[in-house]
Length: 271
Image: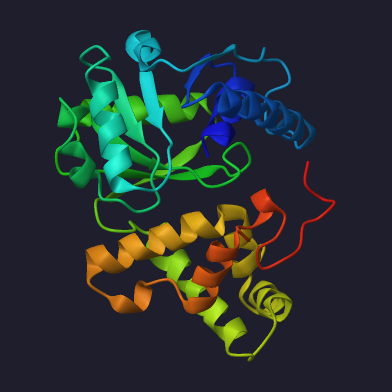
């Protein structure tokens, strides 16, 4: 998601400082971002008259000190996110908007780790971030009006439409989508239908644009399993826990498009 959000910002003429954990990761990210920029231009996602923003990569979180906004987009692990946000909040100046890109971790839970909880909000970007127009903005109990206004200003600059929702595990989109994907995987595991049949029926009968299992492959099955575990823990509903087939695919490393195999085989189509 960090690469997709970076491509979105660059394509809209916004300069980005990308911070990650190693030189190898940053090199891979640069290649992925370049590919996503090419795809975004091909799809008409970026204004043709606007110059591409400048990308700077670094291993130092201190590079965020002069940022006007910080978007945290690391893995869906609440402890890791809390630690990263705590570090960033100690670097940036007061008044800097802090955004966590999470698919379901409550914002107020993460706000406990930052120096100024009023400056933290959630924005759930959908994948690919540079193509999907709508985003979910999550206002925590301590998120200030000024922070929400700053988030909307940034999203407007990025060409996004937004809907604000209240803080809760899974918010709206993940609370609805992830259990549906989980149930679709159970249907496949039980032998009721193939992945292709499930997706074709959801597309043709119910208007789902890609089908739940192709969507799962795009999200990343590891990310999906993590989000479902968090949802089960925070709601107290064990039905949300990732099903056996999903857990088995994650154990095998079949994580979706990013590894070439998930519910579908993508060998030869990855770029």
